[in-house]
Length: 258
Image (cartoon, rainbow, N blue to C red; front, side):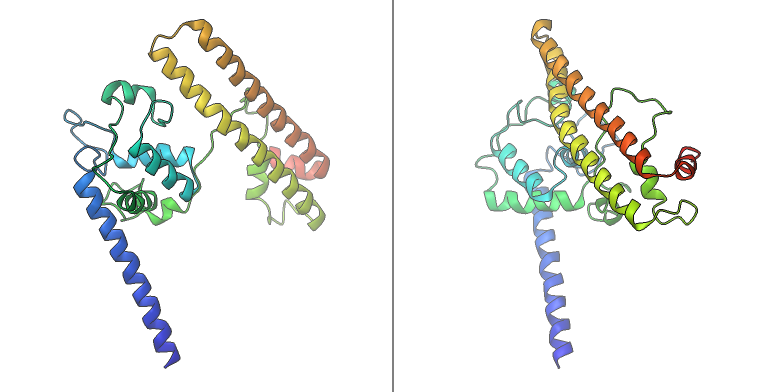
């Protein structure tokens, strides 16, 4: 009897989630799809706004956290501005700034739609929303490496070590694993923080260039980006140095031959 009750609760929970998802998609179809298509269109001549999958691709790069992404959508849709925009400058130049949807959609509806969009876009298959998305959504959005030096002779030890963590040929012991985990955590957190500072600055510079702003206004921002990228490069070099100190010569040779 107890097993049957638990099964019923699980089924009801699943059905409730499914109905909420369908409800959100219905709201999107009624209030958003006139401008934002779900998938990339074949005929772009009549497109009036970026497709949902493209919007969410950019959004997840900026806000990989679901709650933060939903909060951004709710704020932007009701009070859009160029300063908040996450799309490429050429998109705003082509389509213009999105008009506020105050009065067209309620906050409750927006909450549902934003959650549904985050859970279902982008997908790799180009199928109707929801289909074939789970594998894609399980991956965290990549943060572009903001290093000044991108030479193939500078190894990215974090990725190489992760791939060979339990490889018997690489033969890491527990002490090495503990030290390398600390190095990895410190490096990734530092680089991610800098990446999140760099991206909006680069976007602002691009926007200023499109809008033909004076060069003297852009140069300080360019110098700021260069400084942040220099700091990211220092972190990369420090990561290499610390990793070299933890690994044996044999292990280093193993990694550099990958």
